[in-house]
Image 1 (spheres, protein in one colour):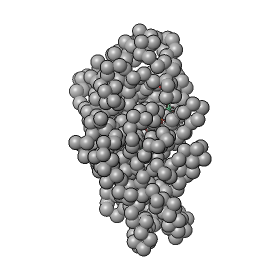
Image 2 (tube, protein in one colour):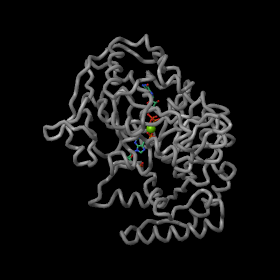
Image 3 (spheres, rainbow, N blue to C red):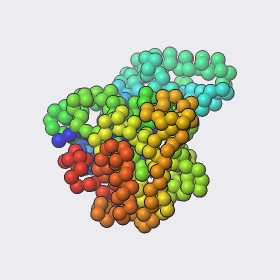
Image 4 (cartoon, rainbow, N blue to C red):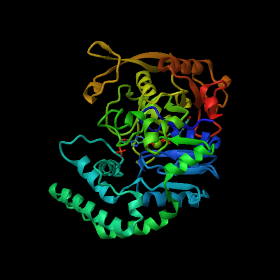
Length: 434
Ligand code: GDP
Ligand code: IMO
Ligand code: MG
């Protein structure tokens, strides 16, 4: 039985949390491999709403193990806050969560560095989630980061912390930033938080590999989306981690030979939060109509999401980067009221057809999307759970996406709840789920 990766095929917020929660009942372990509390994965179970940020969505299934892999950046305060919220709602986190001893620790000073760089005149503002994610990954790559294992060794931690913070404050002073910052108090808080985290920390790469050897199944949960990937996304308007399928291996220590399938999650349209190019962004009133019907507001920051039409060239690109076996198309119901629905089938620039995703933002900003308009179905699909029930035009729409992307649509989501989902009989996805 395959271990699979489920990840975002657009700019995030595709509905990964709902899908991971739904499919996690077929797996023993759900592992996050990158990102931090910039993620916001919303899961509805009946009337209860959960927003998972650092903790894998699989935690909501009693008895399943959830893993925070080495590829994440971990803000202990955000983690403990999330644990407390979930436990108050009756979810047992402490007995089911394993945290990598190699994950990097995020400090308030990382947020300070982010405020400095995002606010600096003349610098391109990325429109980040302001969680300090980028600066924490910067420290990791610069080989001066502090990892969870370091945090748990008090003497080593003090020395590393003091040296790292001395650097941060020197940089802040250079930029004339006068941030009141009590570095010692923060260090004490981290030492206290370390003790709460300690029982959950282990070598999660070994845990995952032993479990796989014993025949247990692992579901890898992506955060953000492929177009926000540090290498393959719309750089520099990206996040600082490997959100695409390759990140699942580096971010957990599980080899590619142990992974049997990759599933992309895509909205029936597309959204983006923050700055950066967005070829199929819809103007109002249609953009506003998608936003309203899809409640497209950020789960973490509450920012209105930019809304647009399904972009088939973008999906072909992310399908290639990730090797999608199957696509889950979410939020089909959001399109129920449109008379007709544009789908981008190609890009043109300077009068020529583009056959590749432009590597530079300046080029991508000038891309002219080529649309085909499909007739809307003008009837509610909300909550439908069988493919046969879907109106003929909705089926035609899905078949069109499938043909234009070149990957099967193995599943369709018609509402936020578990039951509001279709898995197509005979699909590759059905076989992967087992
Ligand atoms: P994630 O970050 O990829 O997990 O996605 P988010 O949770 O940030 O955003 C997706 C939003 O859409 C959440 O509020 C979900 O509850 C909701 N959602 C997921 N699937 C569907 C669907 O098929 N229809 C509707 N109407 N809402 C959905
Ligand atoms: P989930 O997992 C959508 C975006 C931010 C910004 C850029 C960089 O819920 O899909 P960062 O704080 O990561 O340095 O910001 O990435 N971004 C997301 N957009 N969904 C997310 O997560 C995102 N996480 C980061 O808006 O444009
Ligand atoms: Mg989200």
